[in-house]
Amino acid sequence: MADFSSCQTKYSRSGQTLAEALFFESRSFHTFAKNTLRTRTHITMPRATRNSKRGSTVLLRKRQRERKWATVLQHKAAQQWHSLRALAQLHGVCARALQARWQRYIALHAAGNPAALTLASSERRGGHNRAFAAEEEQLLAAEIKAADPAMTQAQIQSAALSLHRSIQLAKGQHVLPTRAGHPFHASDGFVSAFKKRNRLSSHKMTATYHAAARNTQQMEYDVLEYVHAARTAVDKYGPQLVLNMDETPVPKVEHPRTGVVATASPHAAPCGTSASPKQNFTSFACIAASGDKLPLSMVLKGKTQLVVRRMLRGASPAVRRIHLYTSQKGWINSAILVRWIHEVVQPYTAGRAAALLLDDYPAHWTDEVKAAAAAIQLELIKVPPCQTAEYQPLDVCYHGPMANIRARLWMAQRRLLPDAKDTNQAAAERAQLAYDAMSKQAGADAFAKAYIIDVQH
Image (cartoon, rainbow, N blue to C red):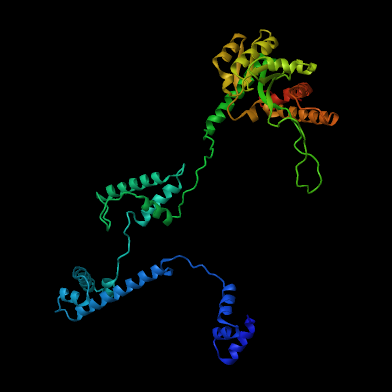
């Protein structure tokens, strides 16, 4: 196709239209059409009523009817001796509709309205003919958008029927006067059109977890009550006999969080291992407010003592100092906790009254555990739910440093023995060595940061 500027120059000189110049400049009409469509810019018009073919036709017919009614009313006003029935037959309109419009014209003209003829001949068909007015439909749409969980098709139908009945009762009507004259059923067609008008669509539903709302004032009261009970226990029993026990997982693989690789490398820092990173077992430590440490304990996954014998077969002295228990899932339960109270806590307290801080895990607060604690004069104090990170000593600043020590030990063992396998024995040994590395002052500082004892300098 020729250059557009040359066509525009010829068009200005010869007096031809721009379309003619473009046409004759092309070799054929086919080439002109192809090149024009290739460079055409498509503009999407808004889908308003007046911009669609059907909307334009409806509006045109409406205006034609209005002009026709205006002509009939002018004829009647000029020649009032003509009967309405004869005028209706003459112009081909409904006699009853002409009578209603003529009465409307007389009333408006008597009131001195200058637009009496225009108002009387106006076409009011196609207005509000739905079960709900615009405001009522917006109210229903707002209810649907705010629903949680989101409404289904059947629930939208139920909500529409409920709103419809409320409107009927408010208006004192039994059937809403629609043009069809049939009762409202909230059919599937109504719901589909309603969703389209209000920009609603059906999506796949996904459950989203929302934490239950908690009373802030009650939480503050529980924290104050817990701190008061714990500090009272320190004054009553002494720091050596106020204990805190908590569980933490010990994985087989405890690599550091970061590793050094080449700059701009697309890969993560390598860490080869023969064990799954998700394989771990439960360990639970117990420390006193004075910083003293009770023996470390662990729960292995298994139904019998066979897993314990496998753990101790060829184990190091550090592993043999751990109190080992078993459960089907590898988690602590009330039976294990009862045994732990008699095997670990009772030898430490030696018949003296003491206190033990525990979180709200259900296995910690069974009747069997409470009875075992009462038998050795052990007072149980519950840490408030969702507050362990700030008010449980082991969670405040004890488990974290132990995990860092275990990671350093794993890295040192891997560099010393690159081909060594990650086993339960190696993980248990790291846990015991990290527990031994925690100083007495670290335990006391943990209780101080949990606001149970005063800061010791």
